[in-house]
Amino acid sequence: MRGTLSHARLLTAALAVAAFAAFGAATAFATTGATTANGTAVSASLSPDTVSKGQSVTQSATVKNVSNASESLGIVVAGPLTTSSPAVFSATLAPNASFSKAVTFPAGALKPGHYTLTVTAINRASGRSTQAIASITVN
Image 1 (tube, rainbow, N blue to C red):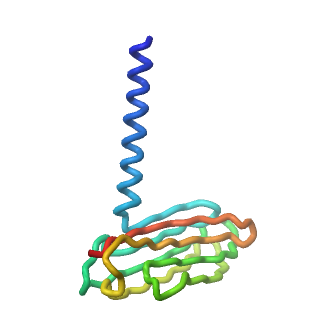
Image 2: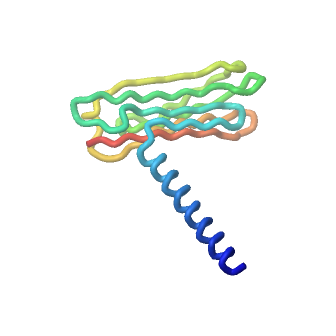
Image 3: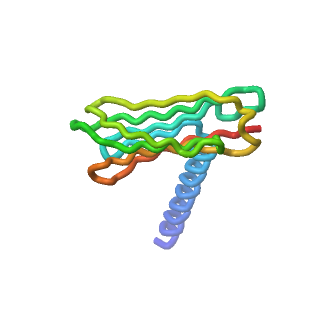
């Protein structure tokens, strides 16, 4: 029985490490993040995943109402450009309706490093939020 317990602990530890590594890889190198909760599907995208000066970066944010009722939402888009504050929008979305914003800008506007785009939808009636995060590396 002791051997079985040690084997089970080893398997649990290996699964935890694998899950942590997969989560770290997904968050560190992902160009798209998507989450569905609280009646909304939220996605954030930065592409390409790695850029250099002279290339362009495309940033997009989408919020979709996946509930069966109209939803009044506050939407916050916080991107990698330090020259702009987070953009805040209000939208009332019918069932299956979407709100989308996209912008393309030169990679030269960013210093080398790692950047994120965070898109948050806040349900004005319940106060609950849904968030998606994408990342990009600038060489």
